[in-house]
Image (cartoon, rainbow, N blue to C red; front, side, top):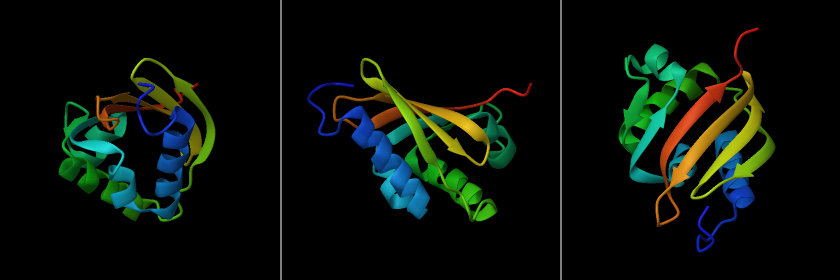
Length: 122
């Protein structure tokens, strides 16, 4: 991530996990730009979007609201944070086991793109 950003990668990750664990979508979405793009294999299944990608906070919020309604006990455990150039990967354990979320950041420190990656079936 850009050194001028107000949060370290670990602070960003912990804030993001804490917001999810409170089921506070406003706090989760505060980490992202208005035109945030989110990709996940589950987008096809739960949002009916064939590309697997949603664009914009409203679309992402609607998708995550569905997820929270289906998983009322959703809880994430932060495992590690990997930092790169203007990006980071959050490794955590959740309802699907070990999961990674990769975020790319804009100059304002907000995530502009995100991808969810899940453990592959054996």
